[in-house]
Image 1 (spheres, rainbow, N blue to C red):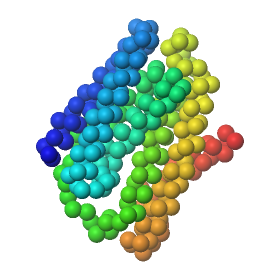
Image 2 (image 1 turned 90 degrees about the vertical axis):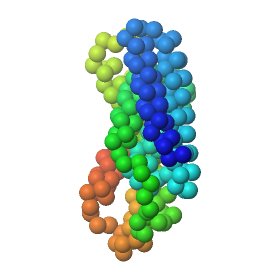
Image 3 (image 1 turned 30 degrees about the vertical axis):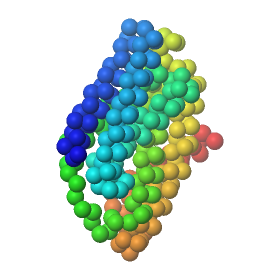
Length: 230
């Protein structure tokens, strides 16, 4: 079954590319009816992404959150899943032209990452790993969607794109804010569980390595944004 990972990953990449192209064509040709087809293809890509995650879970006999390949795979899934839900609720199909490129880049990156299954280091064999990385996946998935919505906001604000091509500025701003409002608590959980796990594994809550430092900087930036927004 391990050999199925690469074909699934390629299928996922091709589907995400096709979805992006349909979204882009719908805006360029001013044919919003094509967006529905692009949305369906995005759902198909998410399903393929989910099948790859299930396959990986079966191969490692656990939750696929143990290395960079598995994190990237779950990150892409969380991003597209969140977008598909938000797109249905707020009629944001046109924003897919900004969201799907992120999924495409993640999929291309996954093709360059070692996907072989290796035994975990003793320090990583902990239940804290699942809590820590799951929180990170949700946080970064919502933040990535907020980023895409913000790009759409800036483009609509600064250009002469027709009103029916992209959602209203107020909608883009409000949904972007809601994504950050959801993501920040999960980023907080990620930092706390990471510190507890570090104490358990290495005897220190914080060591100021680059990953920890930039995670803290990210938290401060989003916390400042919410503070100013309130």
